[in-house]
Image 1: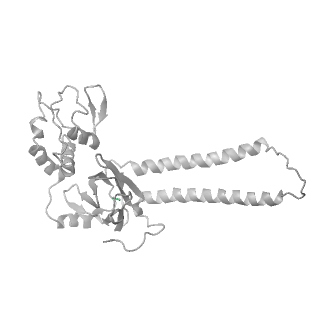
Image 2: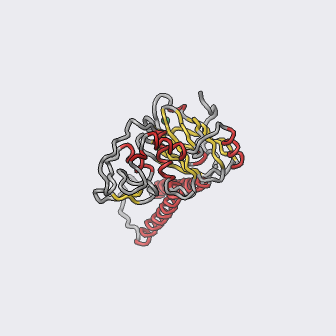
Length: 314
Ligand code: CUA
């Protein structure tokens, strides 16, 4: 079943600000490459004719280019390349760093489908509804092999890996339906692993959310999972608890028994749930059992969302 019977156009529509920036740098690079290719080809042809051998006993002689000419043809290309490097780095950082106010959604790749979770708790498969004009950050993982999340109209693409989180962000500025593709060969139905992104006016998005089954926010469901898995017996917010308090953990520095530190992000929380002994918080014993195999990807997301909400003023 193909969602998109038509072909992908050579230059898909641009639906994000980044898409315009990516295209600008792409066409600039293409233009530079074209100009120099033509320049070199024309000169080769011209010199071949201009300095052709006119007599069968003619012998070539070595010419030395003057220093100023050497400098000109070294410095100008260097300047152009450094300009493209600086420009490219700027666009790259903008494309990779989600704004601080981005709304976080979860995406899971699986042979051969995409599963999404909204912060409000709504779930979707292959389709994702988002509001326009709002930066959206996807926190992504895979249940099996490597997939890659790609929306040509947004000019963003990111690998989706089993066992860890990668992320990607976009802010759609045009209402519309955009195709989502898997961009990493992942098995027999790789080419069919796609879906649709529905970018809607924020008000329409709100009514779409409200129109579904009533949902519980991820943080609330996460709190239930936290209790079900009895995490709360050790991770109590009080002195003498067996596990460290998790209040305000997310986004802050953690110090470990071996003296190393890390800023707690989603990957750190994931590791601490699945491999609690990998990074032991200073002042605590290695008492926590692994939860590998006891929590699935969805429960992990719920736990992480709940832990992220702890100690945050709402
Ligand atoms: Cu998933 Cu290709």
